[in-house]
Length: 109
DNA sequence: GTGGTGACGACAC
DNA sequence: GGTGTCGCCACCA
Image 1 (cartoon, rainbow, N blue to C red):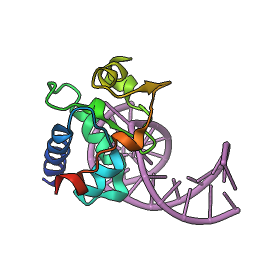
Image 2 (cartoon, chains in turn blue, cyan, green; image 1 turned 45 degrees about the vertical axis):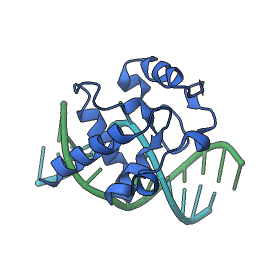
Image 3 (cartoon, protein in one colour; image 1 turned 180 degrees about the horizontal axis):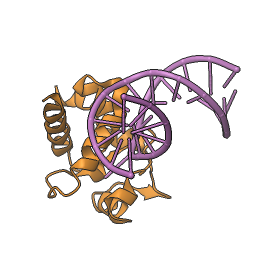
Image 4 (cartoon, chains in turn yellow, red, blue; image 1 turned 135 degrees about the vertical axis):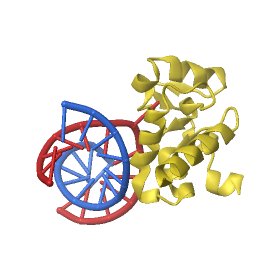
């Protein structure tokens, strides 16, 4: 089942995101080889919602650093977690997103 | 079986 | 440069 592989890979990558860093769905999708299907990354995260904190999904945002998934994460929890890690969030968007961006295909090797 | 939808992204206009 | 449209693939009604 390739879905499970994809699912596991998404979880693994998200777990490897360093504290105080964030990445994008597209970056994860590209790292997994499904760059055109960034929605699948969101799908995987959405289906892993009942999962424990093993998956810091709050560090995953869209390509512009917008916290589009905060409503699925439980309200303002996502922004607060990011702020608690030293990431500035304003109006559901990450400030200096480029500075906090973490690309798995580059830094993970 | 078909159509609509979604934690997105890229391109066209 | 903002808006619109399509692609992508799995899930749900």
